Image (cartoon, rainbow, N blue to C red):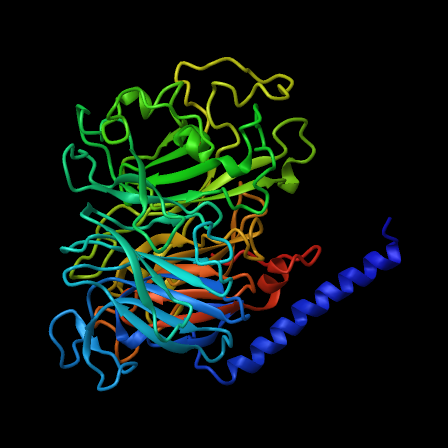
Length: 560
């Protein structure tokens, strides 16, 4: 039992840690130039990424303790610098040859002094927007030496389209190991390090062709030294080769919870032994319109050889499944949520077991599961942006995945438990997170819709182990910068911090456009720019830092 004296000491220690973080941040602020458009957040470090258009930052801690960042890139260079189109000088190589964009490797062990170590150019005609990493000590088929680190990335387009793996143990000298080629529409894959399974957007570029080119490919890539083993293709009903009717929207990305820290814990309304956190995949389809979020039972998706229960209905089900293998009582799909036609599915980041203070006096549904869902703004007009419907981030309540059984575990008093007319009835949008474009008028650059580059939501973080998980989320908002929301009351998320980046000499004349975001296990936030402004390392300050550190009673005034 913890005494009141011990509790007080713990609280004081926590507050002291938050204050120390703020002091360290203030010291860093004096050494790094800061945007004047910020609150409760500041820049700790920066690197230009050679002025290349960047997409996804992802970070991993190496066996020797270093923290290394990998940045996937689009294929364009916003400001040409004496090189052929879509290439730029690479000063990390002797003679600074002109090289295509690809994957940049940066040592961010000291967040105040990030150091670019290597660029892995993409193959001709392709782009490598995504980067996932695994330690050799975790990956089942990795080299036994526990010092190995592996990079997995996509190649979208060109003759080498597919996915690749590199040995990146030596961050200055990455070594190509293996690949799967001849795939269409590759993009934002998920790689489970403990199993080696990959759940990836795309489809085989061979008969039978999927009608939905960006479906979900499932591979076993537990051995990075060899090409992966194909398991199956999966997608939305109507997207399969034998499908009919309108072609459904494409998969943007999937997030598996197999390695979640609470993988063995029951879902909030888990009805069976399989309804645990680690047995779900959350998939976002549609990017910017006609969005769908699906919840997939991982075991039902996989065959027995991988611990699953899927038995192919026919000989070619792996490549050409019937519709009832994609949706229905016996399919892996256990949740199916349709967005409004003007909203898409870009990111689907789950947050489990939330206990909102406002709901704790209620006698049912006091514990809830959510998926933070984003709809990407996609318009790139020539006379300012906002040439489309506004796009938002959503708190999608998935406490009830469907009406087929999610309510039957511990049936709540006064709640119906029947199967509804639509058996997938269950998930619902509980709240939105949005920035009003006129908020920008408080600053010299003015209304976000008039700043030139795209305005609206893009993505959120995807690291289950970041210290803010379940308390805050980071929303990349293109020219609205990075916005931090307090989600402890998910019915009323509150913006508590923001940082809006600034253009530099390498930025596209249209202006900066913050693209994607990630948070590492230390609480540092990484953002990269789509228009060449580089990579910023950000840290929370003030009351937002206190919320992130879990200081009891910490709160910030609502900003926007």
